[in-house]
Image (cartoon, rainbow, N blue to C red; front, side, top):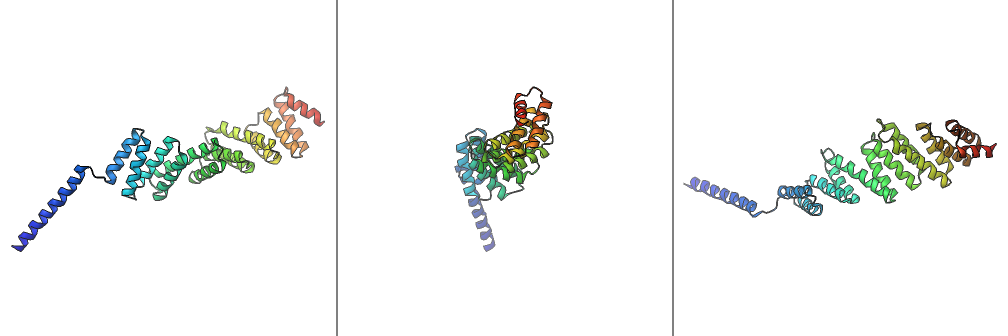
Length: 259
């Protein structure tokens, strides 16, 4: 008899639990899953600020839900808020380095953040972002191009020459060749203007190695060599400019002045 009562009491208790759980769902009480779905829909609808609030709520409900950080990072990327994008993407990556979406989201945030920092003249931040990207993807030329451009902006020309050279080594298909060349040429010209002739020579020599048919680059290289006290090599550079372009007036004038 007692056994029957106990069994009945268990059934009643279980029914009450089921009823309460069902009631909670019916009442719309939050769960991490339900809030995550709301955030994902808001993200798809491009309502990024509202989506961020929901994803932050997911983390409050369940601190192990690292995909919420991925979505927060994506929202901030869509808004162009790169510092916050990098911060949240890093949290996702640190929580789950092998997560299917954690690494690519973190890498994308670093590239975007670095590029935005270069555009706004925040070269120290750009160097940090691109360097971290290179550590994640050491064979991707995009990272070397970005950090090279940031080094040029910061006046760290020797580092720029090294980074851009690594960019060429890893640019297997030549997709970034034009931008890498521009980085070397711009960096060499800026270094020369700032009185850093030896750094200018290093950048321009790397440029010539990659594009040996550019007569104007030989003229700039010759000026840098001359400024660094290397008169004989400067003569050679000006002579090569005239070999490639016999009508190059600046090379002609510079050679005439040296002879």
